[in-house]
Length: 111
Image (tube, rainbow, N blue to C red; front, side, top):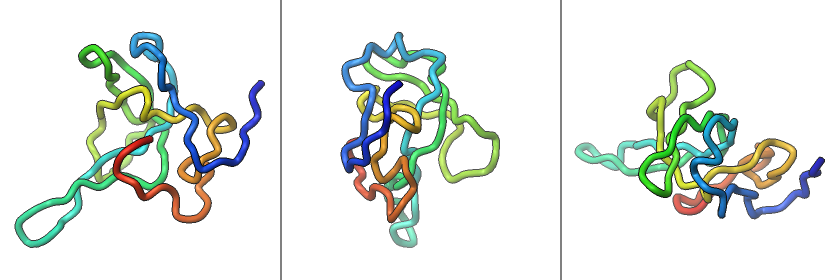
């Protein structure tokens, strides 16, 4: 069993083949849109992770996720991510987004 070590760098599935992730429960930071001004939206990303299931591959390098809950939220029920953007389960990844302490991760790019 792997024990989490608190770090600011997410432990992801980088290097994993997308087809090997099908059926797994993973953690991801969803994208959504927020008003930028009266006539446009800006892309945003959650500073925290949420549980999702990998349902299928999308293209050659990405996977399609279905979020693990059915409540209202500002992002789509299914989303596409690269394996390098998916955090490993609680207890393995101990980045700020996974341990939910502080402000999380406020970067748009990366995991």
